[in-house]
Structure formats: structure tokens, C-alpha cells
Length: 197
Image 1 (tube, one colour):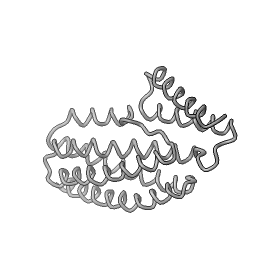
Image 2: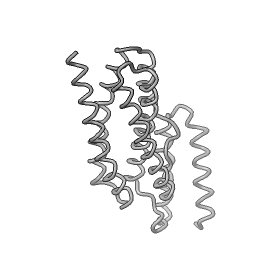
Image 3: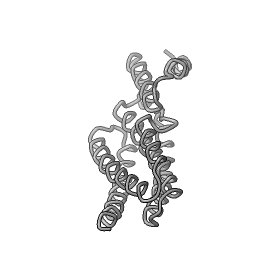
Image 4: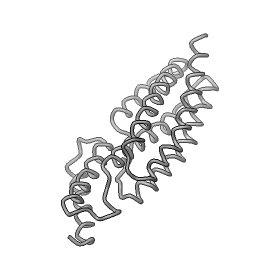
């Protein structure tokens, strides 16, 4: 199959996924497009260096979803938090994860990986729960969520480090892990202070 036909197939798959995937959330849609493209690629003998790595695509989708969530919840913390440290942490989330999200978009684009365009239903549920809270209740719920989220992200990045195939993806992970660990240390410190009050 020549390259032009392959591009048409990918576009058709993306359109079909968009039309028939109304019940899927954004990460499921992105995974579906990546899986179909990966299958199509492998069926046609791949395209050399353009062949899509399933492990990289899966990680990229998860990382993009997590990064978008950190930005959205960080903005929420800047608006709703009472504790100045929680507001400051939210600002750090917006700044750091916006930069990482841009890097991931560029990397995914260069590797023809489809990323989600919004946070998934699980993260949207968390956002809705946080929107319903105010004052110190919001602060505690946000801090607790950020501790769990960063613990989960660090574990996922470390696990992906041994699975991804693209050197650029490994470099992204190596660059991101110290940032995530710094965030975890900061939010655990805030959590300890809050629990002493």
C-alpha cells in the first residue's frame, strides 16, 4: 500500500472512531486510533522508522491525560484554595505540566501518535468532585489527590522507562521523572503541615 493510501486509511479510521466512539472518553479514542494504525502498519509490513510503537503510544496517551489533568486541577487550585501553599502548588502544576504537555505533543506528532484532546472520564469525575468542595475541604481533597496522583505517575513513568522503544520517549521520561518527584516531595510536605493543624 503506498503512503497516500495509508494516510487515507488512517484518516478514515480516525473519522470512524470519532463517529462511532461517542461513548468512549478521550483516552479510549486516542488508544483506539493508535491501535488501529499500529495494526494497519504491521499488516502492511510497517513503514520502517515510521512504524508506530504500541508501548510508546500507550505511554504517551497516559502521560498526556495525566499532564492535562494536572493543569486543569492546578488552575482550580489557584482559584479555589484557601491555603497560599496549595495555591502556589497549583501554579507550579500549571507551569510545569503545560511545558511538559507541549513537549509531549511535539514528540507524539513526530511519531504519528494520536493524543487525547481532553481529560478522560475518571479524571473528569475527580475534577467534578473538587469543584463541589470549598475552603479547607477543597484544600485537603486537592492535596490528597495530588499525593496519590504523583505516586501513581512516578510508578507509571518508571515502568514505562523499560518498555518504550523510541529514544526520544526515554529522554522525555528521564526529563520528567525528577520534576514529578519534586512535585511529590512538595505536596507531601504541604500534606504533613495540613495534618498537624
